[in-house]
Amino acid sequence: MRSFRPEDKLSRAQEILSTEIDQETILMSIDAGAYYGLKGPAQSIWEKLEIPMTFSDLVDLLVKEYRITPEVCAADLKGFLAEMEREGLLRVE
Image (cartoon, rainbow, N blue to C red; front, top):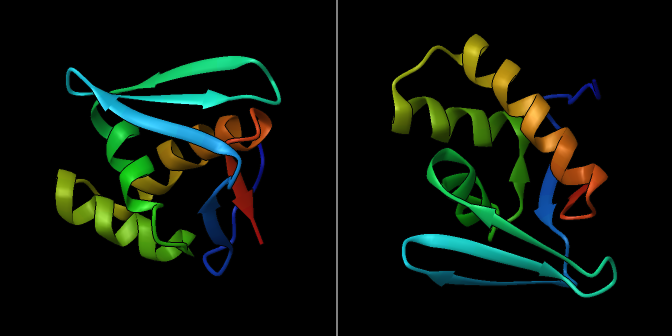
């Protein structure tokens, strides 16, 4: 699994289209010809990444929102963000 550092800057990929339908965020990658549906924590993460932020800042926001430990949050978040990056939905600097 990809390793994320606390200072890594995360942002949505610019070429991804998104909209909300029936309490679900739908993403579309024209380049990949793929659609993605996000609900729950995944949807919350996408919404938060509207404004680029560090991995550490994102963990802090999610810890407050879901009342989980930073260690559990970071571990779960790494897997999801790695998948988003593989699918071309996320940029990491």
